[in-house]
Amino acid sequence: MTTKPDADLLRMLPTEQARAEFSDLDRMPVAELTSLIVGEARRVGDSVASVADAIVPVVEAVTARLRHGGRLIYVGAGTAGRIGMLDAAEAGPTFGVSDGTITAILAGGSAAFASAAENAEDDAAAGAAAIDCHAVGAADAVIGISASGRTPFVLGAIGRARQLGALTAGLACNEGTPLGQLAELSIEVPVGAEVIAGSTRLNAGTAQKIVLNTISTAVMVGLGKTFGGLMVDMRATNSKLRERAVRIVTTISGTSARQARAALEASAWHPKVASIVAAHGMTPADASALLDKCRGNLREALGALAAPP
Image (tube, rainbow, N blue to C red; front, top):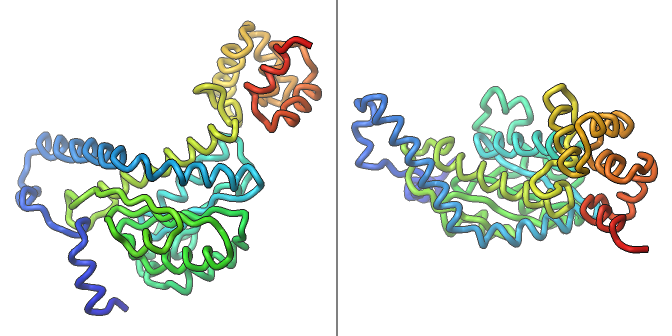
C-alpha cells in the first residue's frame, strides 16, 4: 500500500507531471499530434545520449560477467519489465547466446507480459524471492529497470541480488532515485514529463529500449558475437536468415554465394565456422576448434590463419 509520503514523492517526479502545453492534446489534428509525439521521441534520444558515460561501466561490467559464464538478468514491472523481456528474447536469435544467458524477470510472472498485472510491482518481497528462484549468484549481473526509480518489486530484487554478490545496475528515468542509490551502477535518463502525464510507456519506455539495446549490443560485440557490423553468431532458422547468412559469409570470405552456401551447409549454418571454411578450405571441425581456441572471436581466428608460420 502506498503511504502518504510515498504518494507525495511520486507526485513530484518529473515523469508524473502534466505539461501545460499538452492541455489541448485531445483536440489536436492528427498531423499535429503525430508530429508532437515523434518530436518527443527525438528528444528522448538526446536525453539518452547525455548519459552515455554512465552506460559504459555497465557494459564493461556485464561483459566481464558473461565472459566468465555469468548471466545478464533484467528485472522490471509493467512496461519496464516487458521491455526487459523483449531485449532478452532477441539476444538468442541475433547473437546466438545460449538460452538463459540473457533473461528477464517480470513482476507478476511471464503471464503479465500480455495481461497487465500492475499491482505486482508493489511487492518488494516478491522481487527478492524472484532473484532466489533464478538462483542468482556472484557470477551474474542484474539490471533493475524502473521509470520512477522507486518500484518496490525492482528494489527488492536489486537489494537481494547485492546480498548474493551479483553485479547490480539500475536504469531509471528520473534523477536521484532510490534505485540509483541502491544499485552499484546507475543509469538515470532525465526524460522529463511525458506527453500523457505518467504514461511511462512513452518517453520513458523509449529511453529504456534505447539503453537496453545499447547495453546488450555492446556486450555482444565485446564478446566477439559480431565481425564488424555483421551478426556472425545469428541463428539461421528461416529462409530470410539463411540468405542473410550467405551474404555474411560471402562478405567475410570473399567467396561466391554458391561457395558460401556450401560452407554453411557443411557447418550446420554457423556463419563463423562457415566463414573460415569458405576462406581457408578448413574442415568445419578444424574451424570450430580454432574458434574455441580464440574464445569464439572470428577476427582473432582469421588473424591467426593469416599470420606467417
